[in-house]
Image 1 (cartoon, rainbow, N blue to C red):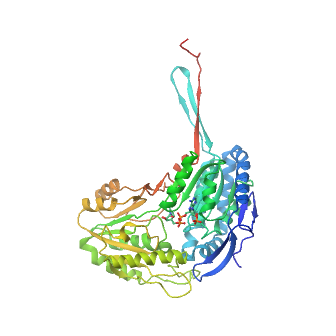
Image 2: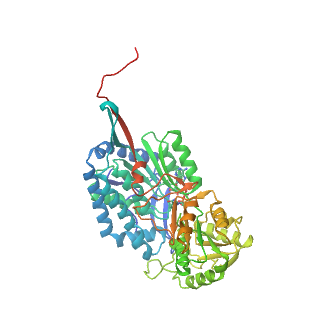
Image 3: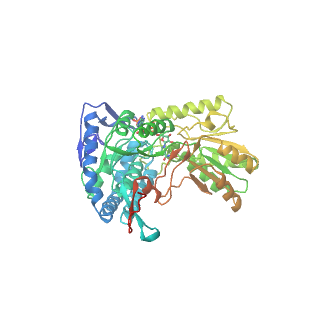
Length: 484
Ligand code: NDP
C-alpha cells in the first residue's frame, strides 16, 4: 500500500507498532480504496507515549528559547521544502483537492512552526515594582505534557497549530489524530525529529475516541487541546475538569454571514463560496447561514448559481479540480441526510442536492433559499457543502437572528457602509469576525469561538498563555513585620 507508514505510532523519536490494537483502515475518499492499515493504540502504547513525553519535558524546557525556536523554524523549512509530497499525502488522507492542500495545509502548519518558533526566544515573565523596594517577578513556565486531539478536516494544520505553541513554551506533546485521517501527523513528528527536536518531545498515537479519553484522564497530562465537535468537547472538558487540567476547545459552529444590499455582490458571492464550499464545506468556521437583504436576494442567488456551475468537481489530484469528495462515506451520508431534512421542512433547493455517482464520496455543492430560522439546516452544524440562504429586512432584525444560536465560532458581514460594518461586528456573539471577506485564519491572529464553540484561542500571541502559566515570586527587601 502506497501510503502505508512504517508503523502506526511515533513515540520517542521512532515508529512503534502494537498489532494487538484494533485495525484502522485508511480510505482514500476519492475512490474508496484502502491506502493504509494502522492499529489503534493499546494501553501499553499510550503508556509508552506518555512516559516518553514526560521524560523529555524537563530537558526540552531547560533549553533556551532560541534553541527551541530554531528547531521549530527548521521544521517549518523542511515542511515547505516537502510541501508537494506532504500535500499529496494530505489529499489522500482527506480527499481535499491538491489545489487546496498545496496552499492550505503543510504551508499553514509551517507558518505556525515558524511563527511560534520566532516567539520562543522572547517568552518572558515580568518585573513588578512594589512599595518600599519590594518587587515581584513572574516566571513563565511550561505546563508539562500536553495532549492534542484532532478533527479530520485539517490534520496537518491541527497537528501544528497545537504542537507549535505547546513546544515553544517548553511542553511536550502526545497528539492523537482523528482515526479517519491518521497519516499526516506522523510526518509532522518525523520532521520535528529531523529538525533537531529531542526524542519524546512530539509523539503521535492513533486511535478512536477511547484513546483520546484515556489520554485526558492520565495524571501525567497537564493540558488537553481539542479540535472537534461540541458533543465531544463537552465530554473532553468534563474529563479534564476532574483533574483540573488546562483546556483549549476549538469546536463546531453555525456561523452567520450577512450580506447587505449595498455590498459588492461579486465579493459577497465569493465570500459565500469560500465560506461554504472550500474543503467541500468541511470547515468549522463556515458561514453556513447566509442572510441576504431582501432587495438583492434573487441577484445574489442567480450569481451564486452561475458561479457554482463553473466549479470543477473530480479527481482531487488533478490540480484544476477545486471541489473534491467528502472525507468519508459516513460524513457524506450525514450531509445528504440534512439535505433531505431541508427539503422536507420546506426550504427551496436552488442548487445541487445530490450525491455524485461513483466509488468516491462525492456530492454536489448545495444551496437552499427561503430557509427560516427554525429549520434544522439553519440550526445544526452540517459540516458539508450545504448553504442556507435566509432573507432579512433590517440591520437590527438580522443581528438578533444571527446571534440566535448556541454556537459562536465565526461571523461575517458584507457591506460598503463602514460604520454599519463595525456596528454589526461589535454586536456579533462570535470569536472570529470578518468584514468584507470570510474564513481567513492567519497564524498571527487569534482564532477560536465563544459560547458553545469553544474555550481559549489558538494562534497569535494569545496561544502562549494557553500553553504556559505564570509563577509569581514576591521578593521582600525589608524586614518581616509580624503582629506578635
Ligand atoms: P469529533 O468531535 O467527532 O472528534 C474530534 C476528535 O476527538 C477525534 O480525534 C475523536 O476521535 C476524538 N474523540 C471523540 N470522542 C472522544 C472522547 N470521549 N475523548 C477524547 N477524544 C475523543 O469531531 P470530527 O473529527 O467529526 O470533526 C468535526 C468537528 O470538528 C466539527 O464539529 C467541526 O466544527 C469541528 N472542528 C472545529 C474546528 C475549530 O477550530 N473550531 C476546526 C475543525 C473542526 P475519533 O475520530 O476516533 O472519534
